[in-house]
Length: 379
Image 1: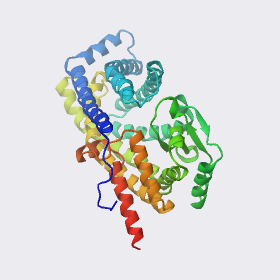
Image 2: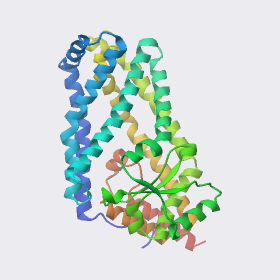
Image 3: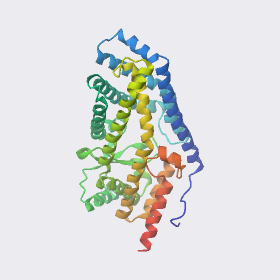
């Protein structure tokens, strides 16, 4: 295959699977906006606040009650789509190995974690709104930055074990290859862990999670079962590239910049729309759907930029993996296997890539590897 070839095409089954997922993304997007507008424009938000006033009049208790009710209602409203996308779609394409009960238990745990994080964040935002009306947006962005760091640090120890059994990687060729690779670049690796993906899915994955001393490497057991030691070494070389280039720190800083933009936009627009909808003021918790709509719009604007930046980092990590291992064929076969197991779209449209892909599509990654190989043959 020459560097100019388009690479492997998407299998028909994967094309159907991803087409459904693309439609579901935009349907969920439009549905969320519509639900917030309905809750806002019909007066249901104000009615919920008035109803809760009979239970609590203290500002922080009322705010916590309203946010809790709002999050529960959001969960219930999104449940049919969650069930279809998370369970029936995965079962239809033979990707899931879970029963409905097992899947629903995971959904409840995921929703509970999201509930706690959202409650802490939103309650803090309303504290800043009430105490610092002129600078609440900056306090909120900084708190979101702080919360993101805390979540990243505790994720390997607190959140991940809620969903997977974690055990150290056993001695063998894979472990020796990974340790030798990291030793070559003088990177101290405390341990390598295996996640029992096979209990839940046929998909394969690997990741580096955590920050600082909590940083850990995790391999799916499905990856170990289906991929050769050299292919797994290439996967970990990619992750090592992220580590050496300090990509996690770059993404954390990007998160802070995004938070400042999003909450800053909310600060600019919030006051105007509060008057339009007749809310008492910025700290009126009934205006939460309005605040979320503005943050939602900011997030949508930032999404292509964030995805584009992430794809740049991923391409650089791919390049590092090829330079570190000089295993182009293993890189290509690993990408093909990963795409086939995960029913990936090898060549999505440009617009889909811009809005939905934080990694380069597989065909582009394979094409880059062939270009690298071709250049090496002519040095």
